[in-house]
Image 1 (cartoon, rainbow, N blue to C red):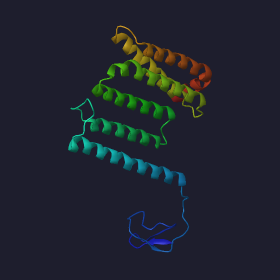
Image 2: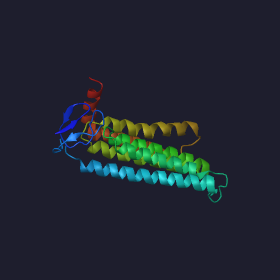
Image 3: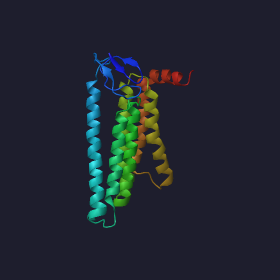
Image 4: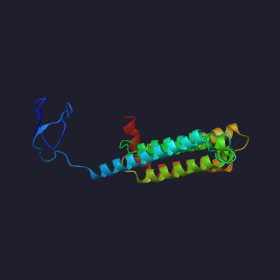
Length: 222
């Protein structure tokens, strides 16, 4: 058994340092007390590799932009490395969300899509294609997310149907109505997004109505 000379406690297993004071322990190592999770080690290695790549691209981009003065063709005053930094941080945040075990599929998909849309809008503002982004790219991305949430609602077995329903309805109806009341005419892509949201909401209620009712009673203690 391992033993810490400072804490004067015996520690089973093969630890090298004391878990209480981090001092080097004495004694003979035993069989590990807990099994090793190879899948977790692989995920950890993958995360470290991609984190190194992200920081590498970020540092190189900032160096080329601010130190060398490299500019995008047609945008002499644009510091493109700041847009690159935004995209890399957004991707990094999305990868971190994938490693969180307490986050449902609807939350992961929706959060990543919303972050991507926000970054795309910022990029479109500086590069000059905001109109097509608002009228086509954003509603198309929202409609695709609503369809994905509908599929997840049908296959989910953990009683999270309501989160898929509310997410799909919110992402389709609310922004479409804002576009309708703000503009003089609703673009076709937004109209399609609104219709997809309402139709799939009704479809999820039809196919998963009992699960929705049970989840509603469970969440609101009825």
